[in-house]
Image 1 (cartoon, rainbow, N blue to C red):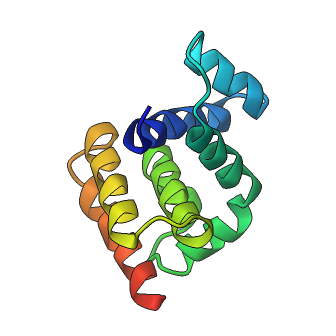
Image 2 (cartoon, rainbow, N blue to C red; image 1 turned 90 degrees about the vertical axis):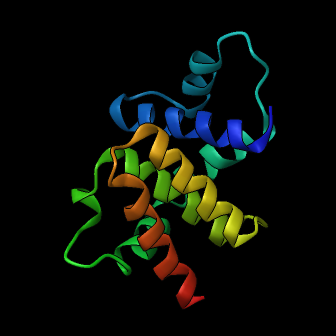
Length: 127
């Protein structure tokens, strides 16, 4: 499984974790069924879960007239993954932003990609 696929699956697992009361391990295994667990997928899911408070704080600092709770769950989850990568992983900024925008286009609506790109660009400009 490449990183793009791992990010996509991580987004879907994190989305489910926000909707259901289950453990990370159970959510990963239920989602992947018989597929082997990809290390990067597990790292991202655990990292976003473990660092959600500082990640959300970083996102909120760059929102204009929004709060983290007002962001649709799809976009919020995608932003959390990208900000996790920017803050805690050695992923090039352009790769992380591009992958997040592609996820937003795939799973969100027509405004999701530009919204995610705008927030992440503001975060990147700060760094």
